[in-house]
Amino acid sequence: MIRIITIIAGVYFLAGCSLFSGRSVPQAIAETPEQWQSEHDPAEVSAWLDEFKQPVLRLMIDDAFEKNPNLLSQAANVQLAIIQARIAGADRWPELSAGLGSSRNKRSNTSGFSLASLYSTSYNLSLDISWELDVWGRLGNGVKAAFYEQEAAKADFQAARYSLVSTVLKAWFDGIEAKQQLALSDKTVENFQQVLEIVESGYDSGLYRALDVRLARSNLLGAVSRQQRYQITKNQTTRSLEILLGRYPSAHLKFPSVLPALSQTILAGVPGDLLNRRPDILAAKRRFKALDQRHIKAKKDRLPALRLSGSGGTSTNDVKDLLDSDFIVWNFASGLLQPLFQGGRLDAQRDEAYIRWQQAESNYRNVVLQAFNEVETLLFSEKWLGEQQQALSTMAKELHEAEILASEDYVAGLTDINTLLQTQRQAFDAQSSLLEIRKEQLHNRVNLYLALGGPITVDQLMNTTTETHVHKN
Image 1 (tube, one colour):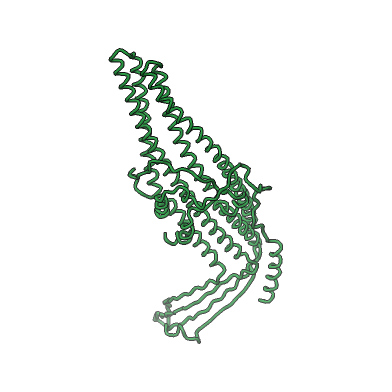
Image 2 (cartoon, one colour):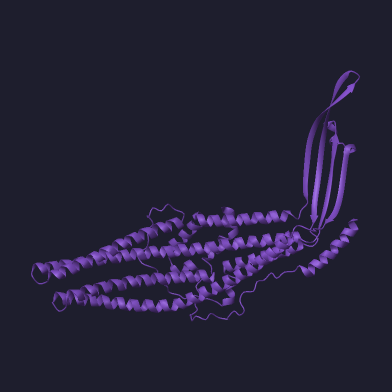
């Protein structure tokens, strides 16, 4: 019997090799260009934090890795995926269970005119084994799927780490810019106050009109309003960053007084490199491979299951005889269990697995296309943001000189109050816009690092791997 079963299983195994193979590599897009279409000047920079030259950033990133609640939750997902892979692997091993029990019975017996009760006690010791032989690899497909899902969870965790670094850096730059904007508004309020005092003094002397006083006062109040707005922005930005670092949002975090300058451009590589470097692409690829294995498994579920089972044990009225070999009984059986009719459940599960497999490939393509789009857009922005920053810098210098000249001309009576106030506002707006564009350049650079899936710092890549971080948590 066992020989016949083995022959049948061999036939199914050979059929499975030819009929139940999958396609474990998803197709990205029809054509991947050999180089990025956006123009850029390549010059390599080693890692994210090395360019900004602010040691406090390294400390904050380490703090965020240890305490950020969202990242800790993502680390737990990796642990769960590892456990799920262990559970899936257990299906390939025999199941062994043991039982120990006792029972007491009462039996009544009549003899003549008397009623007698007989009591008996029995003890049972059993050992059962059950094992499904994975002849055609159906259980192995489930194990492989769980492994790929585990790898996808690890890639998701790496993507979460990169995203956290990006968010912390941009929040840090937001805080610095808010501090600079507040300092600029403080200086502007002071300058506008001085102009108001000059106008009020000239009005008292009969040199200026009441209209000049009211316009100067209105100009000052507008500057005060902007000052208050930047104070709120700085406070909110500080608290948001503290939350990212896993700290209480006390708004006590201190920022430098000047945004860091960008001195290098990025070596973007070629588009094909992105497919093997970005964690989100790797995660999507692993999920596709996992669903590919689940699709194969769903097709193999229609094959017969080869199961071995056995049981043994003892049953005796005396507990001391439980381990006596004379009381041992055993049974061993094997058989093929072929599913015949389940109301269409197996077909539906196979079709569902196929659709999910197709969906995973579409998701993979979408992730790849979005990644290419991010890099192309950010590379394009790198160039034009640099040129915009140079133009704003020149404009801010010109308007600063114009403000000085307008102030001198107004005191000398060569221009009116509107020209002076308008020039002052334009000078402030130009300096404020310059700060904004510098921060936007930093944001774009951080986003580009994230889009390219590059390293954070060399030492963090060597000392803070996914496995050690998960184990530490």
